[in-house]
Image 1 (cartoon, helix red, strand yellow):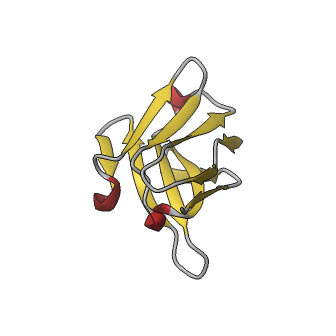
Image 2: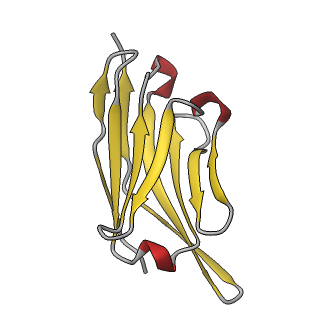
Length: 119
């Protein structure tokens, strides 16, 4: 089991910045991947950024160059730095980690944190 606790959501104006944090109860080095998703009410959850221990970093096209995913292995924390925010970034953001154990793949989710971008 992995518990994830998110923080850092809130409100920002267009062009502003926010940083999301996600603290893992397990060592990040023991996990296969760490990801951030977002979801708008009535729509499917979509992946925003992904950090895989083997395979590197990926971003959703619309956030590339504005968002940065990073990790602190000492603090077991995953970050999502969001710059130059746009109204379309408004959503609930979820932290997600993947744990590949033998033939089984397990996913764990944070509770979600609201990000609202408006003027």
